[in-house]
Image 1: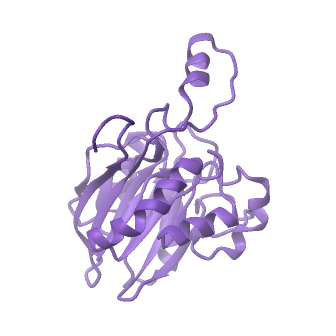
Image 2: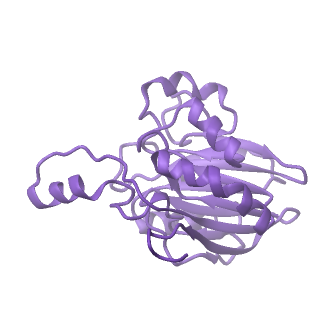
Length: 264
């Protein structure tokens, strides 16, 4: 079973390219499922129930989040009813929503877990201890895909080795920059440090370059709007053996719209 894990969807441009391309990608690659990170889907920060529905309609089967989970104030009252949307499992237990969900397709089922890193990030519970707790709740015969939303590459790869052989895949998100290290770990877990971004690529990780450049050059605060222009879908395709729950292969994926006046 091939599953595409998609990097952070940024604003309306990221949602637009998903609507236009994702179902075609599913057919061409023979995908059994798609898991998409959408913590930046609502104007670059957070998600809403309506936008989650839009992403599901585009072809996603599960949605993961991250440090911007509560970026839209109404979402705290909506997430509880969204069974295939998961927020970091190491948020405080009092937070609404769920840290993992089960996805059932025509041929198989698998679990999706979301966790948040702690290095250079907001204070949260330990992701290593949280994943132990979550894995104890998931049936042992079910493949598990983890979206580890974290800043530090060292924390991501250490976490992946910590769960190697216990989950089917660990995909890093958050930096919006796709890494080139997609690989199978020794005990059969697929891994990539960061899936990348789904959004406008003539930008600063999805944001308009002018205010970001002003911030870097002057130190003055600026509002970082989502950029416009051609978009990219980035992620990784994980091929799973459903019976053994081990990954057979993992490959980085990228589909980039051409810039005006150029060819694809």
